[in-house]
Image 1: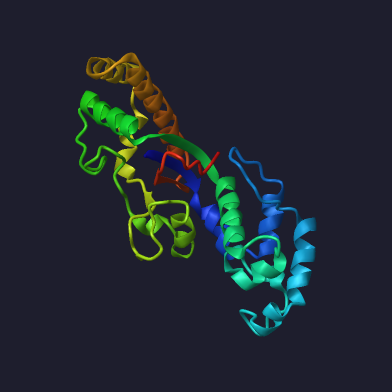
Image 2: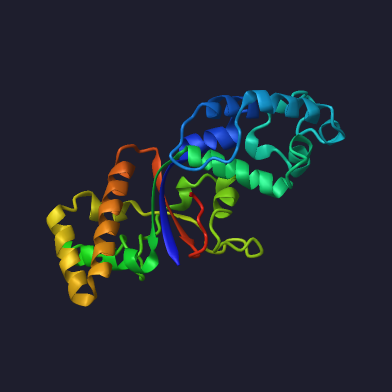
Length: 252
């Protein structure tokens, strides 16, 4: 099992996915650079003929979200139904298209990512808390992984899509464990971690195991510290935690 920690600008993600008309969303996304894989073509030139086809379709004429709404270009990305997506992208199953669109938008606002095995991450964080003399309550959970914070940071109208990134989520069990916001109390464990703290963790790890394990913990803490400072830069950035099977590779 692997853990993935993302630092995401959720406010902008929600704005583009749930609030802005699809034409506005594509306009903003077309030239936006990303550190992570984007599978979608956010070209306006590609979008407009697809919207034109949707506008003439029975799916649109019979089931517009608002009888007074004549332009499908004013519908937000997140509100495009399976019927609309099938008209716009007949070459792709609607469920797959929605997932690809959301993940590409998500990756546009993914600022930083940490991915490591649960074993190495939990060991690194547990030892760091020990070295720094930090109480783990409200910082780490019982497995020494980042504690869960307030769910209010994940807007309700994109919760299902975010859950879709997490293979632990079972759509047949509403409310089952899913992606969670990392508690704010977790980050101070890393924000003022000094090189000597990481050296001490590495020394303890070497006493427990071999050099390979020691180096993995050192690398994990160095990367987690960078992630923490990235999160700290802006109040609009949110830390999200996922658990993923070893074979899954969401952001590569």
